[in-house]
Length: 445
Image (cartoon, rainbow, N blue to C red; front, side):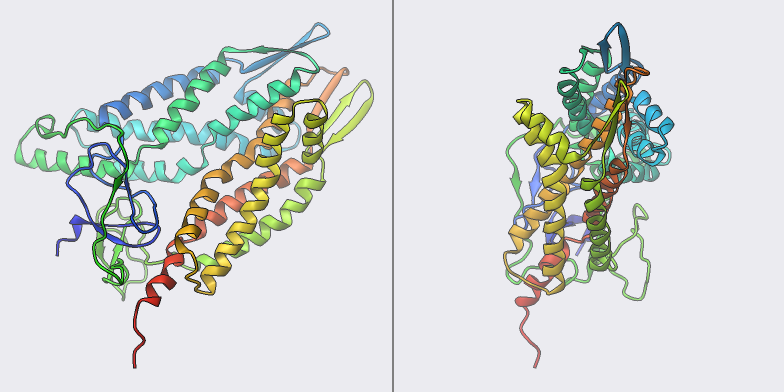
C-alpha cells in the first residue's frame, strides 16, 4: 500500500484514505470529531491567506506604533502602548511578567507572521522557499502562544475599569489592534501543514519543466464540514495497529521503525512517536505545579494602588467584587470566568483525563476527547488579568497623585496559565482511545 495516500488522525490515531482535494472544506474525524490536518486544498486558497497575512503584518506595525488608549485626569495625561506596558512592568521589578507579556502579545505574533510570509510569498510566485521546513516549524512552535485576541479583551476590560476614575481616550492603535485580532483569527485557521502539498507540486513541476501556475488547483471556499469515512471496519484500523506512524507536522504516514529510538519524519524531519513519551507523568507533574501556584495567585495582591498617600491592594477576586458592586456585572462575569473559573476547571478536567487514561478507561471516549479540545482552546483566555494589570500599570502613573504597580499575584497567575497550557500540550489525546481499541481485541489464549 502507498502510505502517502493515507492520513492518521492526530487525536485518535485512526487511519483514513486521503482525498485528492477537499476544495476549501474542513475534514473531521468520524470517530473523535477532531479536524484532520495537512489535507490538500483545505481552508483558504493560497492567494487569500497570503493577502490576509501581509495585511495583518501591516496592521501589526500600526498597532505597535500608536497608543492604544489614553487617560486624562486633573490636567494630567498618560498613554498606553504595547511596548509601554512591557516597559512599565520591567521598571516595576516584575521582569518575568514583562517578559511573558512581551512574548505573548508582541514577539510570538510577529514571528508567526514573518515566518508565514517567508513561506507564502515564494510559493505564491511558484518558487521553492528557502528554509521551508524550518519556517513551518517556527509557525507551529509559536502559534499556540500568540495571544493578541486575549490582549484585545484585556484592553476593553481596562477601558471599562478606567472610565470611573478618568477620561478614557481611544487611540489609533486600539482600532488597529481590533482589526489585527480578526486577521490573526483568519491566519490561525489556516493549516500550514497543507503547504507541503503545494511545495511538492512546485518541486515536481520544476523537475518536469512546467510552470506551477498551470497545474495549480482552483480556489477553495469554506462550506459545510466534510465527514471523512473510516478506513476499516470495527475494530478500528489505527496507525499503531498497522505498524505506521503519522507525522504531526506534515501529516505524512510512514512505517514505524521499532529499533529506532528517535525516529524522524522522512519529509520534514519532525520527531515521530507512536505516543508522546511519559505523557501522563509530565502532564500530572505540571498540573501539580500549577495547582500549587494557583493558591498564591488568588490570595496575593495582583496590583498595588497608591493615591494621595493611601495604598490599597487588589486581588483577582477583589477585582471581580469591584466590578459587581459598581454595576458592571457582565464584566465581573467575564473576569471571573476567565481568571478564576477557567484555570480551576482546566486543572480539574486535565487531572480527570490523566487519571482516566492511566487507568485505561474506555468510558465515553468521544466526550473526553471533546472535553480535551475545549480545555486546550480556552486555556489561553486565563491570561486576561495579566494583560489588564500591564495596561493599568502603564496608564495610572500620575506621580504623587496616583500610581499603580504590579503585585506578586500577577507572577503566580502567569505561572498558572503557562503551566496549564504546557500540561495540555504534554497530554497525548491518543491515549484516550488506546483502551477503546484494546477492548475490541480478543484476548489471546
